[in-house]
Length: 120
Image (cartoon, rainbow, N blue to C red; front, side, top):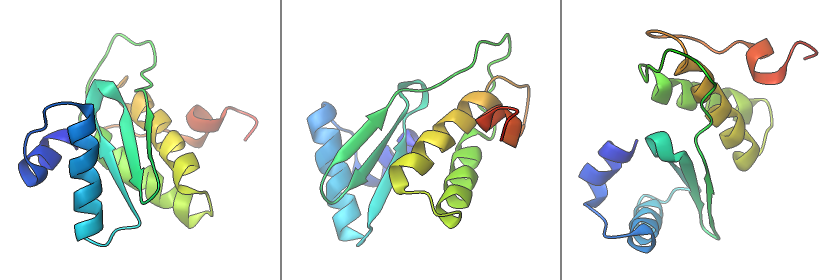
């Protein structure tokens, strides 16, 4: 999450500085990839060769509750990677799942049908 990243990497001046700090942390920890969730600004996946950002995907809803959204991202990302998806594809599905759960009150889940449609 953005707040936790700020505590670890320090505040950044701009997007270029954020990317430099994220890549430095990824390298220092020897990570293949680092995923930074950025709230209403979506998320960014940092790998050795690039940074890929995607916007937040929030469904139209009366409720907007971020409780558990980060946990949803982690769980969905892990399931998608375990199922054989690549990092970027897994990130996109995790982003969609987070967009679903923030449209529900309290700690919520995203069903397979909500993520992939009734035909899945």
